[in-house]
Length: 281
Image 1 (tube, rainbow, N blue to C red):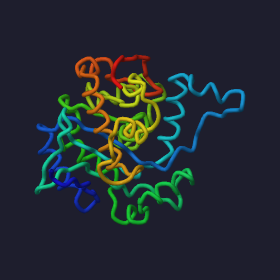
Image 2 (image 1 turned 45 degrees about the vertical axis):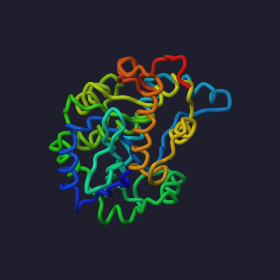
Image 3 (image 1 turned 30 degrees about the vertical axis):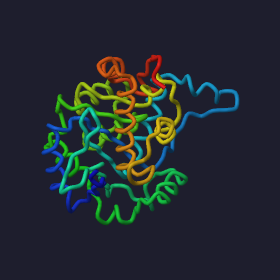
């Protein structure tokens, strides 16, 4: 089996790596995505009496909190994993490409708004904020090249996230030139469709329909999936694990067409519907 690599993308190789991605899209139309950002700084104010109500927070309120955070924060990393529906990865120079990991220069840990605990976690997981500032990608350059790469407005692609509201929020922000997200959830969903096309999936609701709960790592372990490369809270590694979990769920369901229909544009906390499938454990 070919060795798997995560390709690190910086300002210096951004153009060439997008060129590689463009050449693989016809054969590998499933794009799994993960982002890393400096935590959340705005939350719903709760007390001991109201904390239990968070699980039933309305979609509008959940979106409002997400919007406030995305509007105020800057993206640190983006991971993209390209695969076919069976989970096969692109082959490049004898190695499988598990992910492209884009490192952004926009975030300044010394001055930009952030959650200190989240920043400390990202540091422990290996993200070098000084290196990102020095050699990272300007999000405006990324947006231009993304739109030329074949990823943008490509109706053939299927996009996959895990608990993906923030991933999509930050991507919409970057692709609209840093504009504030729309004030209402339906307008946000329209922008997701405009930039990512008619097929966008969030693995978390799919897993919940299988009776699998928790975060990406926990669900992967329950399914017997090992992290193929890298560490958690690194965007490339997490996008690869997102793909592996998604493909495995498809295999266990044995109902790929039904899943693709039932869970299209079903985002955890925003547009989720309660579905349950039997016999998938």
